[in-house]
Length: 150
Image (cartoon, rainbow, N blue to C red; front, side, top):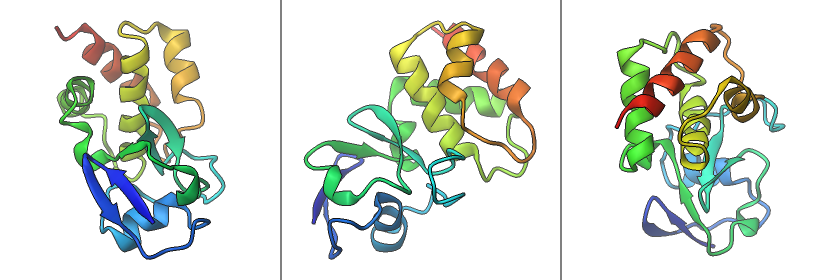
């Protein structure tokens, strides 16, 4: 299988039904994307496919096709990704950090679609991104902080 990840064409010796998460982590060594639940309910494995946030634990690599995949390793190269990452640090969002790659990917997709989100936009975009440490208030503040960056 051939896949475009973070701007580079990569080859993976896997079957088309192999979940994208395992290709990223186990074959390509991009371990920033984490495994959480395995059933697309927690958001930890979120990556962007053609600019849209998707749960990589249930997406077969064969379904990706020619669309580009962006992972947490490269999201900071995009303007909104860099703003989100800076806001995360500025507001000390992270506690244990396990869910943060998925949270950052979802938040970046939100700003890409809605540059100045309100609370309902944030709620909708971040729904299903679970945090064991309960940093939801700081996540919301960081998204608003990043949106205010010019």
